[in-house]
Amino acid sequence: MTDERTDDAPEVEALQTTLAAEHAAVYAFGVLGGRTSRAATPQLFATVSAAYAAHRARRDHLVRELAGQDVDPVAAEPAYDVPRPLDTPAQVERTGLDLERSCAATYAYLVASSTGETRRWAIAALNETAVRELAFRGTPETFPGGDEYADR
Image: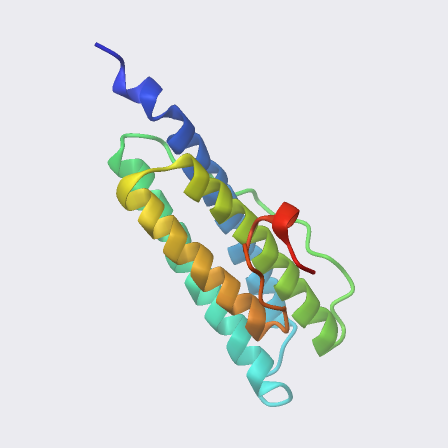
């Protein structure tokens, strides 16, 4: 009889990698939120706020998923590097786009490393991330998260 923990190791590793990416995204979108203004740039503020909420929800889902498998979820770092400068709406927008592209690559990895319900959830997260890229003035991609297939 094989050890189920060993069989699930690649999926658990991918879940942990995805959780680490979500910790970073939540931190970075929090910083971006502090660099936008509801009055001066309401659309950008709404886009950053929506991204922040989505990434928090995904982070929380991943923590529950790992804990439900009796795995200690990877902890967030005390701080993360955020590109500077973030002085203009265009710089905030570009950083948001880069974050979403990075998350798309991570979710593509989770899709490739998982099965069943986890894979379905990862596909939905990848799709949502790809759509959110458009809100940050990204371009539609045939295979979001697959840089080797990017048509940029």
